[in-house]
Structures are given as structure tokens and as C-alpha cells.
Image (cartoon, rainbow, N blue to C red):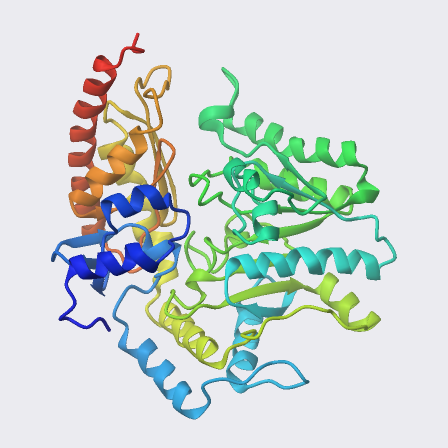
Length: 466
């Protein structure tokens, strides 16, 4: 809780003097000052100036049950009083991570029954990379070390997570990525489909880029393919229906493990507990975090398939990996209560049967017709809006400011969204109603109208305009 006597200006001054933000141009931020979010309730956040903002990003893809849940605060308090912490090293454990592991095994795909805990999606993907390579070494195939990933995919910002990710900017600052990671094209038909190419055919072509990479490296050297069911931070890129079945076929054919990153999509985002079910994927690992606790505590869970787990257990030997807070009892207690809330309130069924389809229709009918919108797409409660200069040829506005302009105007209008280049993305809390969706569309339309005027004016004034 913030001392209410500290002014916004003082908080911003302290922030500028001492706080290094993630994924931030600090020179730019310290010139402008950070927006100070001071409280929240349900689907809304409130800043220090009293503005009410409908949260279209669920915090950061995580606040699935919404803000202000007394029961989550209470269970954390109770656990802190009883046992605030003990580790999972030295052949020890505590009750809540044990109970949570059992619950996750119940919810996960049938072939996934083991759990390894961390505190973030980055940690979970680091664990997955190390575990997959260790598995092949135990199987007597240590040369199978290469992992195929995708351009614009996101798997965290740790050294291993950034290496797995397909973000050029992150790679340029690594000054030496983890070796043995290859990136191929993503299933992003809006920009990458050929003229006249159907969604079905594009999906097959994007999947076969993985097969081409396997053949180029040699299947005997490829450990796994890693992918988000829907590329999230890279722009909510929803693959064609043909994509994942072909990926599954390719991985099975060449004996390549399938690492699925559900840090964003897990725990109801696509209208199922896991997007693996939405896309009928049979994974060997599932990376989860974020909505596991609805962001009320930092916790990740790497769900491990039976194939890997049986080798790890039966062949023995120490797995030299772990974190101080692996299986933190307070975080696991909050996760158990959070999963209970999602079940009890039928949030996943609501997304699948009601609000998810309604969001897709609302965006297509109300937003998709706007002159600077090239495409809307949605699955469950995650969506993207492509900002274009011309709907006909899908050309973009010059420079890299169109998405930021729409985002900033949307926030000014009371609707929090995120910009990825010229793509506006959203991932609201699962508690959203149809009324919340209507409000979001109204506020976004105002932002688009204002943005179009400003963007076309800037383009007309630009000496480089044609």
C-alpha cells in the first residue's frame, strides 16, 4: 500500500532516480515520467490522477480473475502465518506445491503428469531447454541439442529465454546467444501469405519451414520445436487451422520433442484450460506462469510429459537445476485458490461460449470496418487489430508510430491496450462481460478516429510522403 501523503510528482521523481523499468527506453521515460497505477477493482485500474481505465491487457496477460479478489489475499495471509516459506531442496517439500502439482496433472493433457516450479515464464523456459537437452543425453543421443523456434516468438528475457525468442532487438543485446537455437518463419498470414494463397495452404507452408530446418540440421541433431499456440507478445498471431496438425506430424516423423509455451495462453485464455486442447496438440512440455495465480503471486509451472519424466526418473542421476523459490508455499496456495475461482465461476466456459465469440464479432463488425484497420482477429479473450494506411493493399503508415499513436489515444480514452509495431493487441481479464466489450469498442473507435486524423496529417506534412 502506498503512503497517500506521497504525491504523484514525488513518486515519479523517486522512480526516475532509482527504478529501472523492463523493456524501456530509460532516457525517454525519465523525460516524460511513468504513469502511476495506484489501485484496481474488477476489470478496472486507476491512476494517480483518478482516471479509470478498463484494462484490456489483464495486467500483463495474467489477471484472469480480475482485481481485488479478497479470497486470494486471504489465502496468502493465512499461508504466510502458517508457513511463509520453506524450500523444495534437500528432499523436502511443503503441502501447497504438492496439492497444486496434483491439480495441474488433473487439468493438463493426459500425457502430462509432472510439474517443476519456478517464479516466471522465463525461468520455466530455461528449465524446459535444459531438461529437453538432458533428456536426450540420458537417452544416449547427446547430439540432439538443436531447438527450432520462430521469428517474433517470445519465450522470456533471460539469456536462454531471449535466445529461444525470435526478437531481433533482444538478440542484438545478448552479445552471444545460447547456441543451437534456429528460428523459422511464424504463421502470420496477414503479412507473410503469398498473393492468392489460402489460409490452409499458408498454414502448411509455415509449418513446413520447421521441417526444412530439421532436414537442414539433420534430425539426429534436433532436440525439439518450441512454440506458443498463439504468438502472444509478438502480436497475437493466430495460426491457420492447418498449422498445428502439420507441426505435430513433422515432430512425430522426425522424433523431435514438442515444447509448448502457454505462459500467455494457459488457464483459460483460449476457452480451454490449455490452448493445447484448443489446437489438439500433444505436447512433451508445457510452460505456464502468469494466470496460474492471476498475477497475485509470482509463480511458474513447467508441466512435463510422461516420455521425458519416465526417462528422468527411471535412469536416475541428479538434475542440476532449481530455484530458491521453486514451489513457494504462499504462491502455490494462491494458485490453488485461483484455479478454484476459475472453476467455480465457470470463467473458461464463459470465454469459450459467450464472451470469446462476442469479442470476435464485435471487433470484426465495429472495428474491422474502420479505414485504418486492415484486419481484426481473435481467439478466446485475446485479439489483435492491424493498423494500416490503406485497407486495399495493407500498406502501413511510414515510420514506426501508428501503433503507438492508437495505443496512447486508447489509454487516454480509458482503455488499456498494447502496441506491437503497428498491431494493437489485447488480452483482457476473463471476468469481462459483453458490456465491457462494448465499452472497449466505443473507446477504441474514438482512438482510431483521432489517430487517423493525426496520422494522415503527419504523413501529408512529411517530406518523404508520396
